[in-house]
Image 1 (cartoon, rainbow, N blue to C red):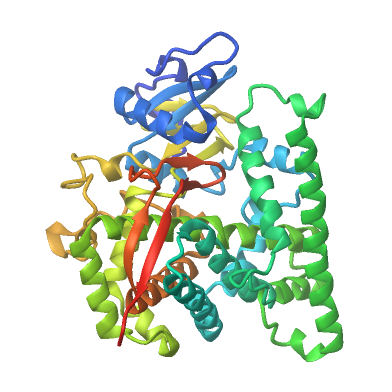
Image 2: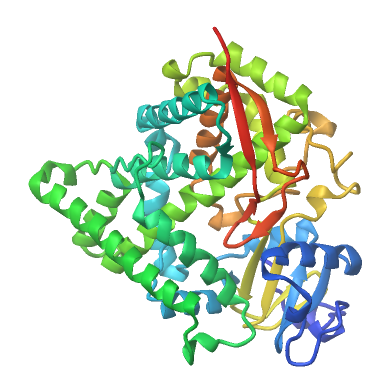
Length: 477
C-alpha cells in the first residue's frame, strides 16, 4: 500500500513543485519528443531531474517515477490504487476493441485473471511442451535452408513467426505455421492496430474523431479484419466443443476454457471478454517474446565469451533439439541468466503508464486521484549506483549468491505485484527453446545491422530492434 493519510505526512510536495523539462505552450513536452523514441527521451530526463519529476503531455501533468523502489511501490498497488490509463481503454474502444486481461480492471480483471493464470501455469505449459518442440524444429528447418543457401535471415521477422505459431497452438489449438510461409491474418493486422493504440494514447489532439487520414482508414480496415478473424477462431472452437462435448470437461486450450467459462455463467467472463483475450494472447506471444529473444541473441553475438558459455551449457544439458525435454529447458540456468540480462539492458516494455484511482502518496509527493504516472523501467537497473559495470552484458551477475547477488527488484521486465505478467514462464521457455536450438545446430557468422552499427530502439507497442539480420552456418555433430 502506498496510500497514506495526508495529515500523517509532515511535508508533501505537490506535482507543481516537482522539477522537470519546461513545457511548451499547448503541446507541453510532446513537442520535444519523437513517439518512436519516447522511452529514450524520458530516460534522459530522469538522468537530469532525478528519480521523481514532472512532465506534461498537452495540458496533462504526469509524474515520472524512475527509482526502482518508487516504481515497485506503484506497481504493487495495482489493481486497487492504480490502473492503466483510461485514455488507452478509450482509444481501444473507439477502434472497436474488446478488452482482455491486459486492459481489464477491477472485478472484471480478477475474473479473467484467474482463467488466464490457470491456462499459463507451468503445469499447463508442460503438457503442451511437445508442440513447442515441434515449432522449434520447424524454425530449425527454415534456418537450415537459409544456412545452406547462404541467405540473410530477417531475425525479428522469423522470431515473430516462431512466437505466433507457439501462442496460436497453445491458446487456440490452431497450427497456423507462419514459419513455413503461411499467413496469420490476425498477426498481420495487429502489426497495424497495436502501434496505433500507442500513438493515439499520447496524441495531443484526437483528430481522427473529425477527419480520417489514409492511415486511419487503413486502421479501420485492419480492425474490421482483425475482429472477423478473432470471431472466426471463436466460432471454430465453439464448433469443436459442440462436435466433441467431452472437451468441455477438459478443454484442450485457453480459448476452449474461456468459452466454457462464458457458457457456464457466473464466471464474470462473456463473449466480449473471450474475444478480447484472444487478441491479448497474441500480443503477449508475439512482440514481447520475439523482441526479447532478438535482443538477447544480438547481445550474445557481441560478447563471444558469454556466447560460448551458453553454447557449452546447451551442448552439455540439451544437445539434440529433436529430443528436448521440459527438464532440460528448466536446467539451462546460464541461458536463463542471458535472458534476464538482455531484459535488464533492453526491456521490451521500457515504461508503464498508470492512472491513480485514489489520492495517494509516492515518495514525498501527493498524487491526486485521476493523475497519471509514468514508470521508467530502465533507470536504476542500468545505473552504476545500483549495478556494477551496469552497461556491460554480464549474465553471470544473475547467478551470483549472497551479498553479490543481483537485486531482482532493479529490473522488473514482467512487472510487479498482482498484475505481474501471467505469461512469464511461457516467455522464458520460448526464449530458451529457440536459443538452445540455435546454439546446438548453428554457428552465427553474422548478426547485426547492415551498417554494422548498434540496432536502434523503436518504440511502438513494445520496444524492438531495427534492422537485425543474421547468417548461419550448420554445425556438424
